[in-house]
Image (cartoon, rainbow, N blue to C red; front, side, top):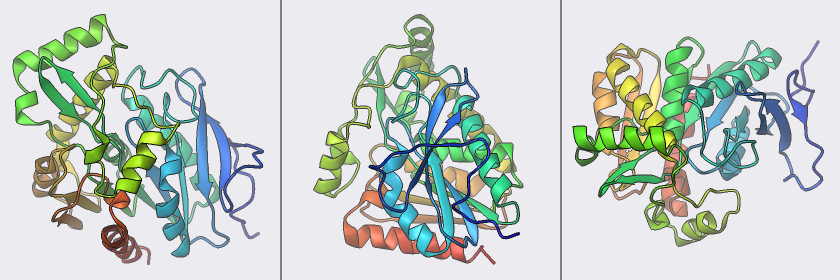
Length: 317
Protein backbone atom coordinates (compact mmCIF):
# COMPACT_ATOMS: atom_id res chain seq x y z
CA UNK A 1 0.00 0.00 0.00
CA UNK A 2 1.37 3.41 -0.94
CA UNK A 3 1.60 5.92 1.89
CA UNK A 4 0.49 9.45 1.05
CA UNK A 5 2.29 12.40 2.58
CA UNK A 6 -1.11 13.88 3.33
CA UNK A 7 -2.50 10.95 5.35
CA UNK A 8 -3.10 11.39 9.08
CA UNK A 9 -0.10 10.89 11.36
CA UNK A 10 -0.68 8.86 14.51
CA UNK A 11 0.04 10.92 17.62
CA UNK A 12 -0.58 14.24 15.88
CA UNK A 13 -3.89 16.08 16.03
CA UNK A 14 -4.55 18.11 12.90
CA UNK A 15 -5.70 21.67 13.50
CA UNK A 16 -8.61 22.83 11.38
CA UNK A 17 -7.40 26.31 10.57
CA UNK A 18 -8.91 27.96 7.51
CA UNK A 19 -6.21 30.63 7.73
CA UNK A 20 -3.31 28.21 7.30
CA UNK A 21 -0.95 29.14 4.46
CA UNK A 22 -1.33 27.06 1.32
CA UNK A 23 0.68 23.86 1.36
CA UNK A 24 1.09 23.83 5.14
CA UNK A 25 -0.57 21.40 7.54
CA UNK A 26 -0.82 22.36 11.21
CA UNK A 27 -0.88 19.88 14.09
CA UNK A 28 -0.81 19.58 17.85
CA UNK A 29 1.25 17.04 19.75
CA UNK A 30 1.85 16.41 23.43
CA UNK A 31 5.09 17.49 25.05
CA UNK A 32 7.03 15.07 27.22
CA UNK A 33 6.61 17.70 29.96
CA UNK A 34 3.22 17.68 31.74
CA UNK A 35 1.40 16.85 28.51
CA UNK A 36 1.67 20.46 27.39
CA UNK A 37 0.31 21.04 23.89
CA UNK A 38 2.90 21.82 21.22
CA UNK A 39 2.14 23.52 17.93
CA UNK A 40 3.60 21.69 14.92
CA UNK A 41 3.93 22.79 11.32
CA UNK A 42 4.41 20.39 8.40
CA UNK A 43 5.33 21.18 4.83
CA UNK A 44 4.37 17.96 3.00
CA UNK A 45 5.17 16.77 -0.51
CA UNK A 46 3.28 14.08 -2.41
CA UNK A 47 6.18 11.66 -2.97
CA UNK A 48 8.95 12.50 -0.51
CA UNK A 49 12.49 11.24 -1.03
CA UNK A 50 13.59 12.24 2.47
CA UNK A 51 12.31 13.97 5.60
CA UNK A 52 13.84 16.91 7.46
CA UNK A 53 13.15 18.17 10.96
CA UNK A 54 13.77 21.91 11.35
CA UNK A 55 14.58 23.10 14.87
CA UNK A 56 14.02 26.76 15.70
CA UNK A 57 15.78 28.66 18.45
CA UNK A 58 15.33 30.90 21.45
CA UNK A 59 12.35 33.23 21.38
CA UNK A 60 11.20 32.50 17.84
CA UNK A 61 8.88 29.95 16.24
CA UNK A 62 8.73 27.45 13.40
CA UNK A 63 6.64 29.71 11.16
CA UNK A 64 9.80 31.68 10.42
CA UNK A 65 11.09 28.76 8.34
CA UNK A 66 8.47 28.74 5.58
CA UNK A 67 10.95 29.83 2.90
CA UNK A 68 13.50 27.20 3.86
CA UNK A 69 10.85 24.48 4.00
CA UNK A 70 9.45 25.51 0.62
CA UNK A 71 12.89 25.07 -0.94
CA UNK A 72 13.26 21.68 0.73
CA UNK A 73 9.88 20.71 -0.74
CA UNK A 74 11.19 21.51 -4.22
CA UNK A 75 13.85 18.86 -3.61
CA UNK A 76 11.08 16.38 -2.65
CA UNK A 77 11.87 16.64 1.06
CA UNK A 78 9.04 16.49 3.58
CA UNK A 79 9.81 19.17 6.20
CA UNK A 80 8.36 19.54 9.67
CA UNK A 81 8.96 21.48 12.88
CA UNK A 82 7.36 22.36 16.19
CA UNK A 83 7.32 25.35 18.50
CA UNK A 84 9.17 24.49 21.70
CA UNK A 85 7.48 24.78 25.09
CA UNK A 86 7.08 28.46 25.95
CA UNK A 87 7.53 29.53 22.32
CA UNK A 88 5.19 30.60 19.54
CA UNK A 89 1.82 28.86 19.70
CA UNK A 90 2.88 26.12 22.12
CA UNK A 91 1.81 25.94 25.77
CA UNK A 92 3.98 27.19 28.59
CA UNK A 93 5.10 30.49 30.05
CA UNK A 94 7.45 32.23 27.64
CA UNK A 95 11.00 30.88 27.83
CA UNK A 96 10.35 28.97 31.04
CA UNK A 97 11.47 25.34 31.17
CA UNK A 98 12.36 22.62 33.62
CA UNK A 99 15.45 21.34 31.83
CA UNK A 100 17.07 21.81 28.44
CA UNK A 101 16.55 18.15 27.50
CA UNK A 102 12.80 18.80 27.31
CA UNK A 103 13.36 20.63 24.02
CA UNK A 104 15.45 17.75 22.70
CA UNK A 105 13.01 15.08 23.87
CA UNK A 106 10.03 16.88 22.33
CA UNK A 107 11.81 17.09 18.97
CA UNK A 108 12.74 13.41 19.26
CA UNK A 109 9.11 12.47 19.96
CA UNK A 110 7.93 14.50 16.96
CA UNK A 111 10.58 12.89 14.76
CA UNK A 112 9.55 9.37 15.80
CA UNK A 113 5.92 10.06 14.91
CA UNK A 114 6.88 11.22 11.42
CA UNK A 115 9.30 8.32 10.98
CA UNK A 116 6.45 5.89 11.67
CA UNK A 117 4.84 7.26 8.49
CA UNK A 118 8.04 7.18 6.45
CA UNK A 119 10.19 4.40 7.95
CA UNK A 120 12.32 3.88 4.84
CA UNK A 121 13.28 7.50 4.15
CA UNK A 122 16.53 9.18 5.09
CA UNK A 123 16.29 11.80 7.82
CA UNK A 124 18.01 15.19 7.96
CA UNK A 125 18.13 17.62 10.86
CA UNK A 126 18.46 21.40 10.45
CA UNK A 127 19.04 23.51 13.54
CA UNK A 128 19.22 27.28 13.87
CA UNK A 129 17.91 30.06 16.04
CA UNK A 130 17.58 33.71 16.76
CA UNK A 131 19.40 35.07 19.77
CA UNK A 132 18.60 36.71 23.02
CA UNK A 133 21.20 37.77 25.55
CA UNK A 134 21.68 37.21 29.25
CA UNK A 135 23.46 40.05 30.98
CA UNK A 136 24.93 39.46 34.43
CA UNK A 137 27.03 42.18 36.00
CA UNK A 138 27.95 43.67 32.66
CA UNK A 139 28.63 40.35 30.94
CA UNK A 140 26.60 38.94 28.07
CA UNK A 141 25.81 35.39 27.03
CA UNK A 142 24.53 34.79 23.51
CA UNK A 143 22.66 31.60 22.71
CA UNK A 144 21.81 30.06 19.36
CA UNK A 145 19.53 27.38 20.69
CA UNK A 146 18.21 25.58 17.62
CA UNK A 147 21.66 24.44 16.54
CA UNK A 148 22.44 23.37 20.09
CA UNK A 149 19.26 21.27 20.27
CA UNK A 150 20.14 19.70 16.91
CA UNK A 151 23.56 18.64 18.22
CA UNK A 152 22.03 17.32 21.44
CA UNK A 153 19.46 15.33 19.45
CA UNK A 154 22.10 13.88 17.14
CA UNK A 155 24.21 12.89 20.14
CA UNK A 156 21.18 11.15 21.62
CA UNK A 157 20.33 9.24 18.42
CA UNK A 158 23.57 9.27 16.38
CA UNK A 159 22.46 6.64 13.87
CA UNK A 160 19.20 8.40 13.00
CA UNK A 161 20.41 11.09 10.63
CA UNK A 162 21.81 11.01 7.12
CA UNK A 163 23.06 14.50 7.86
CA UNK A 164 22.84 17.36 10.37
CA UNK A 165 22.95 21.02 9.31
CA UNK A 166 23.97 23.55 11.96
CA UNK A 167 23.34 27.19 11.06
CA UNK A 168 25.18 29.63 13.36
CA UNK A 169 25.10 27.18 16.28
CA UNK A 170 25.97 28.09 19.84
CA UNK A 171 28.87 25.79 20.62
CA UNK A 172 30.97 28.13 22.76
CA UNK A 173 30.60 30.86 25.36
CA UNK A 174 32.42 34.16 24.89
CA UNK A 175 35.60 34.18 27.04
CA UNK A 176 34.58 37.39 28.82
CA UNK A 177 31.34 35.68 29.88
CA UNK A 178 32.92 32.48 31.14
CA UNK A 179 34.71 33.63 34.29
CA UNK A 180 34.08 31.75 37.53
CA UNK A 181 32.43 34.83 39.05
CA UNK A 182 29.93 35.41 36.25
CA UNK A 183 29.04 31.72 35.97
CA UNK A 184 28.37 31.51 39.71
CA UNK A 185 26.30 34.70 39.56
CA UNK A 186 24.19 33.19 36.79
CA UNK A 187 23.60 30.01 38.78
CA UNK A 188 22.61 31.93 41.92
CA UNK A 189 20.14 34.11 40.02
CA UNK A 190 18.76 31.03 38.28
CA UNK A 191 18.13 29.36 41.65
CA UNK A 192 16.52 32.29 43.46
CA UNK A 193 14.92 34.16 40.54
CA UNK A 194 14.45 31.54 37.79
CA UNK A 195 11.92 33.61 35.84
CA UNK A 196 13.88 36.83 35.97
CA UNK A 197 14.11 38.47 32.54
CA UNK A 198 17.48 39.76 31.46
CA UNK A 199 18.64 41.78 28.44
CA UNK A 200 16.85 41.77 25.12
CA UNK A 201 18.52 41.36 21.78
CA UNK A 202 19.33 44.25 19.48
CA UNK A 203 17.63 42.86 16.37
CA UNK A 204 19.87 44.86 14.03
CA UNK A 205 22.48 42.13 14.53
CA UNK A 206 20.15 39.38 13.31
CA UNK A 207 20.41 40.25 9.61
CA UNK A 208 21.75 42.89 7.23
CA UNK A 209 18.32 42.93 5.58
CA UNK A 210 16.31 45.77 7.14
CA UNK A 211 13.03 44.17 6.09
CA UNK A 212 13.94 40.99 7.95
CA UNK A 213 14.87 42.99 11.04
CA UNK A 214 11.52 44.77 10.90
CA UNK A 215 9.72 41.46 10.39
CA UNK A 216 11.41 40.06 13.49
CA UNK A 217 10.62 43.15 15.57
CA UNK A 218 6.93 43.14 14.63
CA UNK A 219 6.26 39.40 14.72
CA UNK A 220 3.72 38.81 17.55
CA UNK A 221 4.82 35.19 17.93
CA UNK A 222 8.43 36.16 18.60
CA UNK A 223 9.26 36.70 22.26
CA UNK A 224 10.55 40.26 22.58
CA UNK A 225 11.26 40.13 26.30
CA UNK A 226 14.46 39.00 27.94
CA UNK A 227 15.62 35.45 28.52
CA UNK A 228 14.71 33.85 31.82
CA UNK A 229 17.58 33.27 34.21
CA UNK A 230 16.94 29.52 34.56
CA UNK A 231 16.63 29.17 30.79
CA UNK A 232 20.10 30.67 30.42
CA UNK A 233 21.55 28.36 33.05
CA UNK A 234 20.12 25.31 31.28
CA UNK A 235 21.46 26.41 27.90
CA UNK A 236 24.87 27.16 29.41
CA UNK A 237 24.99 23.66 30.89
CA UNK A 238 24.06 22.18 27.50
CA UNK A 239 26.87 24.09 25.78
CA UNK A 240 29.35 22.75 28.33
CA UNK A 241 28.07 19.21 27.78
CA UNK A 242 28.46 19.40 23.99
CA UNK A 243 31.91 20.98 24.27
CA UNK A 244 33.12 18.05 26.37
CA UNK A 245 31.90 15.36 23.96
CA UNK A 246 32.56 17.01 20.59
CA UNK A 247 35.61 14.78 20.03
CA UNK A 248 33.37 11.71 19.97
CA UNK A 249 31.02 12.99 17.24
CA UNK A 250 31.05 10.80 14.13
CA UNK A 251 27.81 11.65 12.31
CA UNK A 252 27.84 13.66 9.05
CA UNK A 253 27.31 17.38 9.44
CA UNK A 254 27.47 20.78 7.77
CA UNK A 255 28.27 23.82 9.93
CA UNK A 256 27.49 27.24 8.43
CA UNK A 257 28.55 30.47 10.16
CA UNK A 258 28.95 34.12 9.20
CA UNK A 259 32.18 35.83 10.22
CA UNK A 260 30.28 38.98 11.24
CA UNK A 261 27.99 37.11 13.62
CA UNK A 262 27.95 39.33 16.71
CA UNK A 263 25.38 37.21 18.50
CA UNK A 264 27.03 33.80 18.58
CA UNK A 265 30.69 32.85 18.88
CA UNK A 266 32.01 31.64 15.52
CA UNK A 267 34.97 30.18 17.41
CA UNK A 268 32.60 27.54 18.78
CA UNK A 269 31.79 26.31 15.28
CA UNK A 270 35.46 26.21 14.37
CA UNK A 271 36.47 24.34 17.53
CA UNK A 272 33.60 21.89 17.13
CA UNK A 273 34.63 21.18 13.53
CA UNK A 274 38.28 20.71 14.42
CA UNK A 275 37.46 18.36 17.30
CA UNK A 276 34.80 16.16 15.68
CA UNK A 277 36.16 12.94 14.21
CA UNK A 278 33.42 12.44 11.65
CA UNK A 279 34.68 11.27 8.26
CA UNK A 280 31.97 13.38 6.59
CA UNK A 281 32.17 16.89 7.98
CA UNK A 282 31.95 20.30 6.32
CA UNK A 283 32.48 23.79 7.72
CA UNK A 284 31.57 26.89 5.71
CA UNK A 285 32.51 30.38 6.85
CA UNK A 286 30.70 33.25 5.11
CA UNK A 287 32.52 36.58 4.92
CA UNK A 288 30.43 39.58 5.90
CA UNK A 289 27.36 37.55 6.87
CA UNK A 290 25.42 38.16 10.11
CA UNK A 291 23.79 35.60 12.40
CA UNK A 292 20.55 34.51 10.68
CA UNK A 293 22.10 33.28 7.44
CA UNK A 294 18.75 32.25 5.96
CA UNK A 295 17.39 35.76 6.65
CA UNK A 296 20.23 37.69 5.03
CA UNK A 297 19.63 39.87 1.93
CA UNK A 298 18.24 37.92 -1.04
CA UNK A 299 21.50 37.49 -2.95
CA UNK A 300 23.28 36.31 0.19
CA UNK A 301 20.59 33.92 1.36
CA UNK A 302 20.56 32.42 -2.14
CA UNK A 303 24.16 31.33 -1.53
CA UNK A 304 23.17 29.83 1.83
CA UNK A 305 20.26 27.87 0.43
CA UNK A 306 22.29 26.64 -2.54
CA UNK A 307 25.02 25.34 -0.23
CA UNK A 308 22.53 23.77 2.17
CA UNK A 309 20.48 22.03 -0.54
CA UNK A 310 23.54 20.79 -2.43
CA UNK A 311 24.97 19.29 0.75
CA UNK A 312 21.69 17.50 1.53
CA UNK A 313 21.15 16.33 -2.05
CA UNK A 314 24.63 14.82 -2.14
CA UNK A 315 23.57 12.60 0.79
CA UNK A 316 20.06 11.65 -0.28
CA UNK A 317 21.04 8.76 -2.56
